[in-house]
Image 1 (cartoon, rainbow, N blue to C red):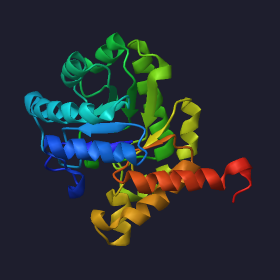
Image 2: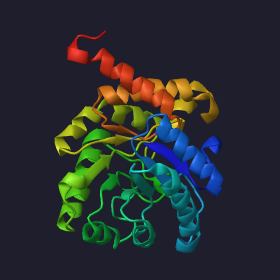
Image 3: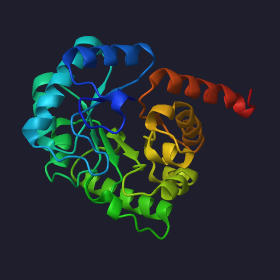
Length: 265
């Protein structure tokens, strides 16, 4: 999954694409490099991110989605939003999209109804609070068990709303309401999320859990990101959400080669 940020304030500056031309070029390059899906975001979810109105978010998403559709062909496009109105407008104008919801339906009470009514694929992420408050909600006794329990609770609510399980992907939410150490504890126990029976999306690309322990910047975290991607794959990740598609594809190919017939290289 290739990240396309139509935002001026995403934590990794090089991922910001704020013009029609820049988005089209980014999407075309990502697909050529092997991305299976493109993820468009108009609302930054970094810690303490600026809150936006629906109209401001839609202005960004509409521009980016229009540009992406020009070059994406049949490739699926997801929208990183927790707002049902953004999904309504996007599907009314552009047709089916994948919904990538960092709140798993808690951020907007209408979201699950819209997803169910329009039969959209849905990615539900674990988070506590909002991007503005989440880093004050990092109290866990056993983070893996609690993430599993809280995702199970959301999965039940998603099904109750009429969304078929076959259309749901779960995301443990690395970096969302979790400290650096908790992120690594969660990564080490990621395989335990398989009990939920759903595909797992992992988004760790260039995040603080990678660059802070190394004393580097997000710009310098490409190689270390691939090391964490390898471990995520080993622990059961189905899909990686990434800034750097070519490098992630190489990591996936080597991981698959290494595990071919369970005999390694």
